[in-house]
Amino acid sequence: MMNDEEASGADTSGVLDPDSVTPTYSAMCPFGCHCHLRVVQCSDLGLKSVPKEISPDTTLLDLQNNDISELRKDDFKGLQHLYALVLVNNKISKLYRLGLGHNQIRMIENGSLSFLPTLRELHLDNNRLARVPSGLPYLKLLQVVYLHSNNITKVGVNDFCPMGFGVKRAYYNGISLFNNPVPYWEVQPATFRCVTDRLAIQFGNYKK
Image (cartoon, helix red, strand yellow):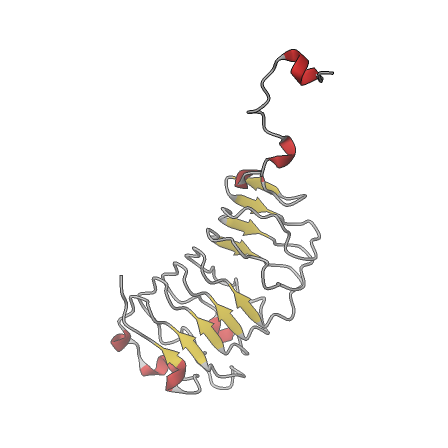
């Protein structure tokens, strides 16, 4: 006995099964968030953690005014086009390592790192930063900063170390700046006055 499809004579060989269709990036949006033009807005939702199902082509992720208390290893994995991340007014009190390498980050706004007083490692390598992020001298426990493979052209004398003595509790034991268009011979020695050892500073030749 023929079923309805056979009886109708319709060719169903080219019809897609809805359950087998993989959603496109533009269709991905975390529950409760608003997503438009590669901007994902998840503010004021009472979130306890960074939401899942964030589109890989997201350029701006707004997570401000939530109850996020920690950032996990793979929270931002795959967001290779992320340009801006907003995490102000959350409950992140203990974060020791922040890895944001291998993205397309061009700028860290002033004050963006001020909510991370316990940060010890900051990984911003392989991005598109044009300068050293502001606020590093005031992260008293910061010891490792990866900034290699960016577009940094200048390093200021106060980019890493505070101007006053006794402000920083832990000295740096690792700063990587290689593969940046920085004329390293122009960087003043006092720039690294709060580094444990000169060997902890990694410069290198820049290759286009």
